[in-house]
Image (tube, rainbow, N blue to C red; front, top):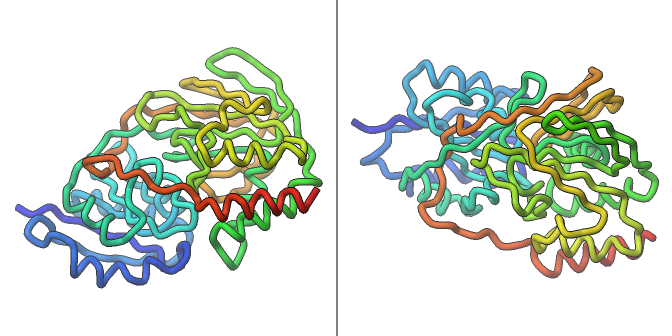
Length: 317
């Protein structure tokens, strides 16, 4: 009996790659192994409802075609079920896909699905919501909100927003309880990482693993502008945790106490939040994700783009 696959496509995700998926599926998906249907999301977070319904309709796999936000919507509908999650990256940063070494090319991503190899990964519960990749507070939440509301996508847009806001952004004090131990630190931003990166291969937590039962808490202080180029290089070359302005903790549970911000970065989407505390808890191995049989390392952002990033930072000082 063939497995049933449901492809959920976000028609406005990323940079337009999703428009080619229907044709590519007809050409490259193994029809001897799979029957499949395609559906398009019609409004924000529609994929969560579609994924939940897929569990009731006998689908074996839901494939998210979109960026990290689209994938997260599917995660929230599938977490804890036996249905596998497939990914065809069609977003801007594609952080979770890169962390899982899923190819960014549509044809190669479909070939990964044909092989049907999967991994049980952790997810994270944040005040009743679930994510698989990253959440954060502070400066990255501000950028995520501005990026979410921007009409253009891609690395250049992200860079422009960072440069626009960085100099005038004031770090804040945060009080955390990490596996029961309280600490207080001033930070530009704090990221609560299940995966290792924001996207674009900007690896903020090089030692993070999707199936170790732990959350990597990355606390980043504001870097003097003269040192920013060095820290940027460390970010893209998997050395960020060694920077003197970065502290990393690992835990099963963490709370942000007396939380006063009203924005959270939730898998790349800036969402509004009203409440005094945030609580993050790891849910071990409760999501099945289709992955390559062998690691397919995604390239860094090109050296030219990194140099441009650094040049722009220097020019902003």
